[in-house]
Image 1: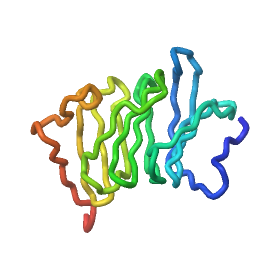
Image 2 (image 1 turned 135 degrees about the vertical axis):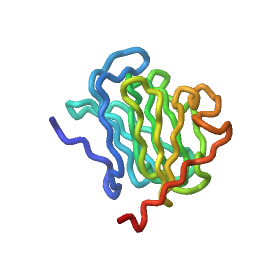
Image 3 (image 1 turned 90 degrees about the horizontal axis):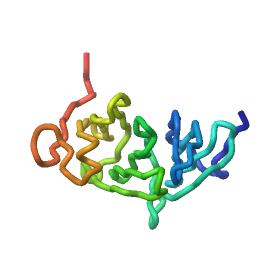
Image 4 (image 1 turned 90 degrees about the vertical axis):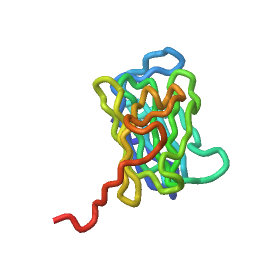
Length: 161
């Protein structure tokens, strides 16, 4: 495989691998998504061909801290340094959801249940973890499993023995 490189001066902050991605209903096979320190997202084929690039934020250069594909690669989910969680539809090639589950605390890591795309876990820069019903989240309904308002589960990762 040939190397696909972000433009000079950009640090790759996040990378994810798709099993079978589709754009405008065309099956492209395996796709690599990377997010950089200036808020750009690059999608490339496993052969190294650049397929698509876009800005995660249209008005500011905000780093992409983590990026994952949904189980069927229908969506690309990315967490931003400004606290935004965004969902990008790979068929329509556009952002379909944006929310701030922890306010402005930077999102650091994302994990999605790859078997049924139901559970999304989000971790932020101050040790909070939120557990969401991803299907409800992207359909516009509140995605928390417990309370009907966004109240992140708070877990401190400091001073653990």
